[in-house]
Image 1 (cartoon, rainbow, N blue to C red):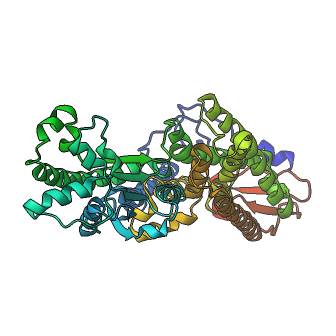
Image 2 (image 1 turned 180 degrees about the horizontal axis):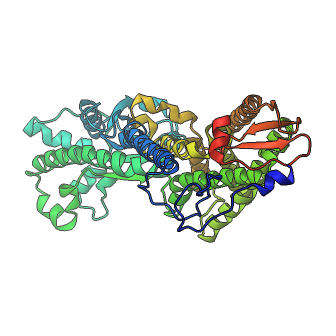
Length: 506
């Protein structure tokens, strides 16, 4: 630019000077920074005030919209849970009085509680209760109840019912309770009659709030009824006083139950890795996305690199950053003595690290692909939506939530949490399936990142514009800052223009 034009540039006047032009009608003066008031009546202040209020109230209104559209996704996952009952099994290995009583009571309660009970024949489990327990570990059902008839109970009740005419007894009873009633046995244990099986580590919230309370309520009702019947039938027994003195539990609690927690949630610190950790990993991913974007903007690489090189840079930066961050994230978990070798032995930590690494990529690359299109100003809304839709499906089992939450089976957080539970607690090994779904998310994000970057670059294609000296320049629009960047093609300097004028020109 010529020296004469540069010399005509207005000088900055003191902040006390409020006039916009000098007395001779010269060029307008520039007002010093920090000299305006919000309600100033100058045209420039009016424009700035209008932009601020439009942005402020528009953003606030968007937050209100999110409160009534996105937040209910999480609240609905907790409201009136369970909307659908979990599946439970009842297996009668006894085929006697207790087995019939338990099966009948739970069948009558089918679908009324939090568990829908299915009566299965004992012939389906040729290996007995061990095979049944293995099926629950394999997550074929959420809970199971088996009734192994207490030896001797049926014979004694059969003898007593001849006088009271209360029960019809099926064959196959043994002699344990008969012997205890005839010859008191202080070691008699009625809790061996019924066993409930569950896996707390599969979902500790479901086990503690849905499965165990429902199981206890049903079995308490059954055992109380059976205990009353046994006590009434044994009232006329000649050995009653001796039984009450030596083995009162034979009369007071002839039939009880035990809940066998096959895989307990015995590491409280694991909550940070399997639930809250999903939120923290999303936040870490958001930080990486914003840091990478800022680095590209500050260096100018967003404008100077070719589309291909820019895509490669973004992908390589993301893969490297999450590789390092996931390592230190896992080391931090180890510092709090989380056990990761129950399923894969000495290779447990490597598997734990790689699963977290893949999970971070699956969740955060989705944000990386969208920042080019939505700009940093739109990312907080996307981030909040992504967090809520992911966390809503891992607090309680999807089986207990409304059908709309079935999308959770494909959600990154659900599959990451399920894989981590297998590593930490030794639940059913679905690591391969979960990692496959996470890889699908990574592949999808890589494709969408490339397509969005190509699309935005195509819209930002340079267009020549004449300069004062007859040269040309290319104008790029940065989607993140929304200001024009003039690149002089003829090597000539151009006087900087206010950002507002540049936006108007664009």
